[in-house]
Image (cartoon, rainbow, N blue to C red):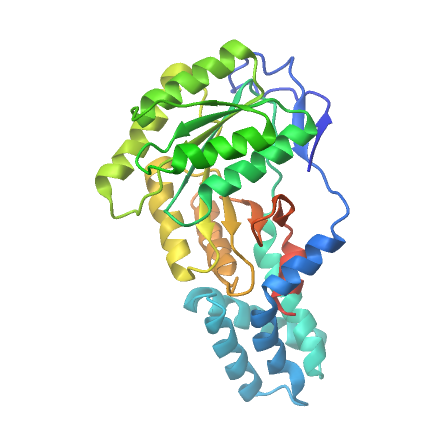
Length: 338
């Protein structure tokens, strides 16, 4: 999933510690046919619901009304649904489309264009170590996603150190330890230790041992748990004490089954941590997937205000290592429409 590229020249404004001498890992494409099959199966229900709208013979108000209902059922949300319908109608007018199947293709193009800004590769190697802080609510698949990401990085040749900073959940350290053993990487943990202290020790150890990546697993929490959200802020501050340029990535893992609540989580965690990317999990049959359209529209608003977008680095459709892949707007749009 990742491959070596020539070192990247750091920006003049970026810290230069070891950045100019280390190899850069960057997402690379590989044969994805099996992945596309799994993704299509995961979004099959949504694809059937939306696809059924285009089985008629006329392009009229009834078609658009059915499509509106299907997009809302797919968890696209009111604003993203309105955006897509407006854009679709303009495309139909511009192309003089007369067949519903042509309208379906235009909708796929509209969704792809909306999602395209979310498509960005995760780059590793500009800093050594690259410190990645991972957050998410309980049950989103955070620790499992860290394990899968560790495997991909390790397979590419990157050396990874894990930080078991989820000290609130009894089984979290053990779960991360299983992934560490599977991937044959080291893990830093403390029995009942302070999450920030564990994170500090891991970043310090990562620097001393020359690791390429330090992945910090934080405790799952809801945005309404203010004391735990404050703990996340503390972890980030303490990580910066260990390495003033870190964390270099702050990722949020969201469950693709949670619909518009996923967008609420993105907004809340971004306000606290300043997110740099997302991992969307569990697009495996029950998820509707449309929430990515809502996230993309939210991202447009951020960019319009001069803020960076928050890309979707990876999406997952199951529990196996190969069920986590880089996000492609075109692939997702096609899968979403069946």
